[in-house]
Length: 184
Image 1 (spheres, rainbow, N blue to C red):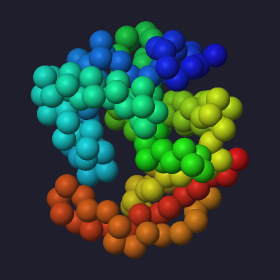
Image 2: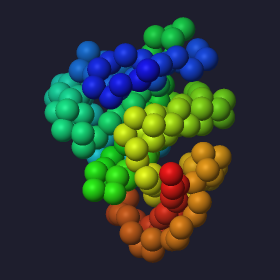
Image 3: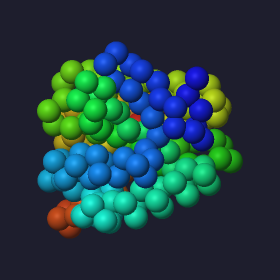
């Protein structure tokens, strides 16, 4: 069982998945800081709120309020052996009237290509649908982000269209986003 409102975790191979809590602020900061350059364009909000350890602690406290309000669910992936946070799957832009939500995901560069983020994302999707009856999940992915496109396609998402000139990166570039959806 993987309830949304406590911090129990589920084990997937040598990793566990759970909601982020304030006690993990330092480890979360370390994950973001180690991957800051590659995350800054498409995880701009997370990067902005985690510039320092103190910023990250405040941000993690704010996140707890969002979890309680059911407006944001940040799942972290923890390497059990290393006892470190290695990835994030965030559930955001939740619209309970449908219900639908947007997924975003990344994994530490050292763990890319091992299938961890794919398995973890599939688990989170199953939980979102079974526990909260989401009818649609969607992802917006830059068309140059081949790894993320592969992830969403492997998770059963279908390309629904291209949102042209829809997102401004931190460098000021306005880019197209592929819009992928999955219905339940």
